[in-house]
Structures are given as structure tokens and as C-alpha cells.
Amino acid sequence: MDDFRALDDWLAGLLANIEPAARRRVNRLVAADLRRSQSQRIARQQNPDGSRYQPRRTDKRMRSKAGAVRRRAMFARLRTNRYLKSWSSADAADVGFRGRAAMIAAVHQAGDDVTENGQTFRMPKRELLGFTEQELEQLADLYLRHLAGARR
Image (cartoon, rainbow, N blue to C red; front, side, top):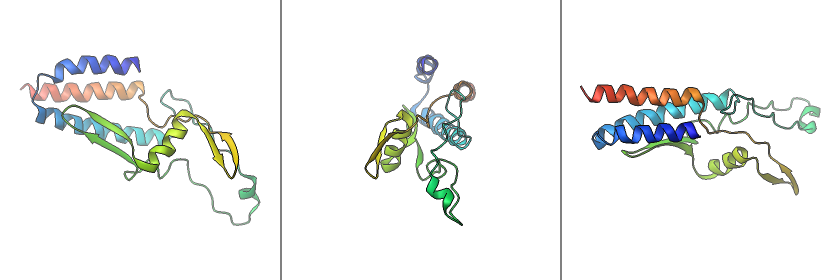
């Protein structure tokens, strides 16, 4: 997170010198790129630090039923365009969840307690959103390429 703050401070000075329309364009590109990379990382079932998500708990009832529906990968629908949204303006680029999807994602992101059928259990922490070192470098490259083109 400190790396992101350093990147944000560095870019703030550079972006202040260009017009709002150009900032809006670059932030839209950055938000779309960041949304894509976050979705791909969620599909790989990885935390931002590179560790794997803790697997979902096994439900013995599902195993015992003949012809039971096979479970899909975790967060298969949550990472689709319908739920994982990107927003941008001249001043910001944002990627996140909205509505009920945001509540579900927040429980996984923080690893909170969940009550299901009267039983409370601790949801394992699975960081859905966060920056990897590669994503920070990619964001810096996107901004630099845009700034180099804007100054010509």
C-alpha cells in the first residue's frame, strides 16, 4: 500500500499539468486495465501477495448426493462486468463492487464472521481487490505512455 501512495503522490504532480479531458481519458484506460487485471487475478484464485485463496469448506452433503451439481470456481460471477465495476473521472480511477455484491466481497476481503442457518463461522480472508507489484508497474507505465503522448 505504501508503494501505491508513492505512485499516487508522484503522478499527482504530473497529472496536474494536463487538461481535465486528457486526465479523464487516461483514467478511463487505467480503470479498465485495472478492472481486467483484478478480474484475472480473482479467476486465478490469488491474493495480491501471490498466495492462493483458502479453499472453500467442503460440504459433505454435496458429496453424498448422486448427480449433485458440481461447484464452480469461487467468485466466478462476482468477477463479471455485472458486479465488478470500474469508474473514472478527471480526478480518479476506481474499481470495485456495488450493492449486494459489495457486501459479499467485503466479507471475503476482511474475513468476517458469517451466520448461516443459525451457525456462526469465520469466513477465511480472501483479498479480492488489491494491488500487486506488477499492477503498480503497469499503472505507472500507462500513465507515462499517456503523458509522453500528451506532451507532443
